[in-house]
Length: 318
Image (cartoon, rainbow, N blue to C red):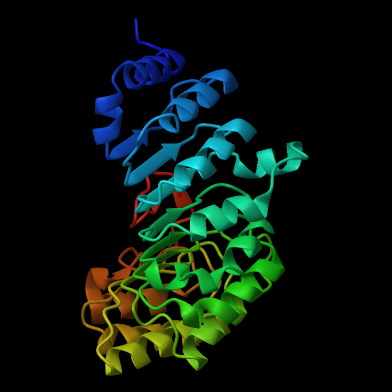
């Protein structure tokens, strides 16, 4: 029969423990979605072993494994090795540790992440961290904003305060190429303001991928994003994909998005289930073809799971 995830991680931990040279030469740890829940003791043991040797890890990607207090403490210790470039904690119940442990220090973990001198990819997809991201965003003076190229806060249930701070600070992100905010807000408040700031502050023109699907954006937000994309094209920005599906727009805002497609010949905009009339969808498809994603059938698509993630951090879930 198939070997359970607990046995796999224990075997890996034992292998690292018995061969310190091997551990010292491992660059990447990827733990995919397990077929069954992994026990807390196993999670603690595995990350404890990682921190017990001379690690030179540059990537840690964990999907669907519930982190524990001890494993996050080990993660902080691991961050002290200061060689990580990619940290992906996808649906790892980070928020549950914060809620359950009186000893868990959100600021300490945020400081450890922001202090990584080479970190350029961070995914916290699927962890409803709400307020916790504030601790991270307030540490911009560490240089984190200058370094990050990929930031995924999809399905993080960010609080309104977190979104507003992000909207103010995003001008500090100098190198960001991929921003995933799909279904990121706990409420709709704040996300429209983020789109407005992108346009009025001429921010984030380093992006080539923006995903704000299922963010409950309004027609005004769509118009701001369209004008932002048009402004970026005028200065040679490299935007290639804008996922704004599963929001509620008007035909007039969709018309402006069509102008963005005209001015940005490499851009594709995903528009599934955006409340646009069948006539407008047909017009967008006639003018721009598949670059107006979701408009080919002239009807809305209601299944968000049908829209693939453009930047995939070990999960196909939307």
